[in-house]
Length: 71
Image 1 (spheres, rainbow, N blue to C red):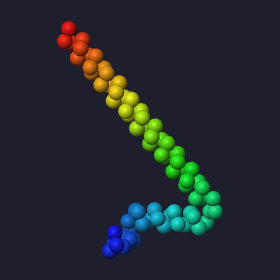
Image 2 (image 1 turned 90 degrees about the vertical axis):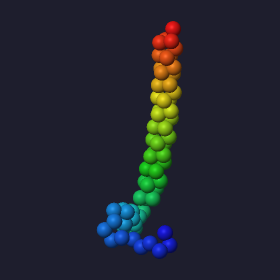
Image 3 (image 1 turned 45 degrees about the vertical axis):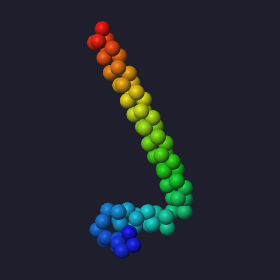
Image 4 (image 1 turned 30 degrees about the vertical axis):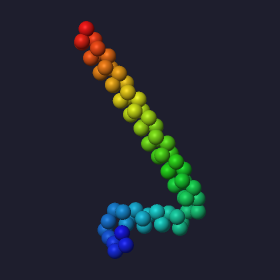
């Protein structure tokens, strides 16, 4: 990343400009962004736990139907 420059029409560059403008015009935006970040992290963790539970449930059902079919 040492030799890269920001591209003027890149969505990432526009996003960085937006964040910098928000930080300069609103004093409490940093706290709001920290709150949003923690909310997104908690949501991500909840989805991962839910997905893991569903995979375990599915594996249990697949194992139960395999045992039923073998008898």
